[in-house]
Amino acid sequence: VLTSILTGEGYATSAEISKVKGSFAGYEKNKEHMLNVIKMHGEEAQKIEKKHLLPYMWESAQEPWKAAFENGQKYGIRNSQATVLAPTGTISFMMDADTTGIEPCFSLVAYKKMVGGGFLKIVNQSLAHALMNLGYDESKTRQIIDYVLANDTIEGAPFLKDEHLSVFDCATNAKNGLRSIHYLGHVRMMAAAQPFISGAISKTVNLPESATIEDVIDTYMDSWKMGLKAIAIYRDNSKGSQPLNTSKTKGSNQDQSAYAPSEVERRKLPPDVKSIRHKFSIAGHEGYIHCGLYEDGSLGEIFIRVAKEGSTTSGLFDAIGILMSVSLQSGVPVKTIIKKFIHSRFEPMGYTENKDIMTAKSILDYIAKFLAIKFLPQDEQMELGIYISHGENSNEREAQKLPETKVLPEAHFAKSTIFSFQDAPSCRCGGLMIRTGSCYTCPSCGENAGSCS
View 1: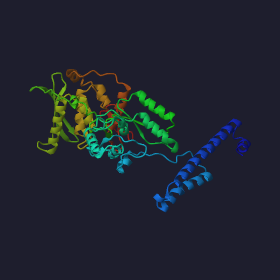
View 2: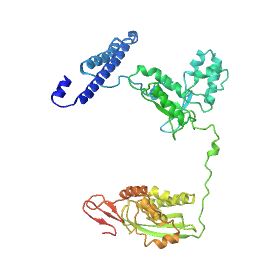
View 3: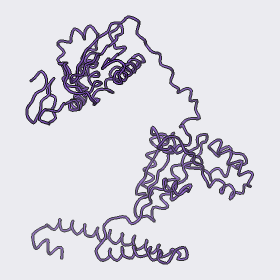
View 4: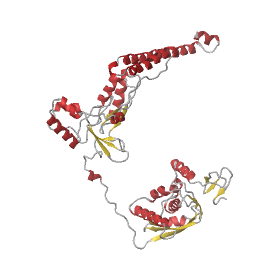
């Protein structure tokens, strides 16, 4: 029928007809396969023992599979999934179970990082039952468990036989231990369950921190060869933080004092220094910036004077100036401080009396731009979206021995464009202006702000 329709109407050639037939044949094959999957699930549901359920619950478990099979025969069925194995880590935690599904226990003792701060120590509740089943009496079991609680590992525990160690292997090795389940153990376990699941298995294959690139490649290849439909890999300690750890501080078995930051020696200024004093006005609000310089002309301290002495605003900006000064004297680059404060937005904001800084989003924004103009080379200014005419400042820059301007790569222009739009003020017509050189232009009404107007 399909051939007669297509050829009779002149819609397709013989080759195209064959291709269409192949697609329909593939659909029919897939339909048959999915119907078999639905049928098998229905048959397994019928094997559930009624004595464990209320009558209506057993019947409710049969109806969906029966309806799905009948509708699939009548209307067809798409390439879909009937069952998957969902993530079980959080589920098992909520159920107060050591582990559920196909996921092995992460560790006999694990520390879960809490969102609000701190750690929750989780101890495997099956440890005592396993030891008793292996023939250890109550006294030995208690001593082994006490050892695990004290050392976070069962390796080296008193009375424990070497042939029983593998029983307690987990997804990752303990802080003071070496043993863990090999990655192929995870993969083979999933491969044994995959034929009974129409979709994929959500499970993490844990690799130790010592795993190599080749180990990761082998994990993916072995998973593919064994017919798994999905695989997830996590190499221990590969991220800055992870929800579960075998200790409160990863690597705490090492000497932490070796990593303790040493006290930074401040490079304080002498009693008499050269300085720059600058008066500013933002929307009518006036203030002063005092910059103390080292002998090489670099910035060493900042004092900010705004409002009346004793006011809250004055106190806050005094504190900000002190923090900036201590940071500069402790080795923090001036560019880092500028990037943290530029484009800060709060009142007072608006137009200024500085021809190089036409508008400011806040006093901190103005200070950051002023420092950038005085102490950064032109290419870094442009990277931050600051464009000024440097002709008048050439003598000052030479006196301060600022770095020479470098050729700007494309990446700097991209950053510059982003900062330019962040700094654009609003026009009187309500539109957002865009930077045009050292000025701003409104694309809606054509209004200019700056030296261009």
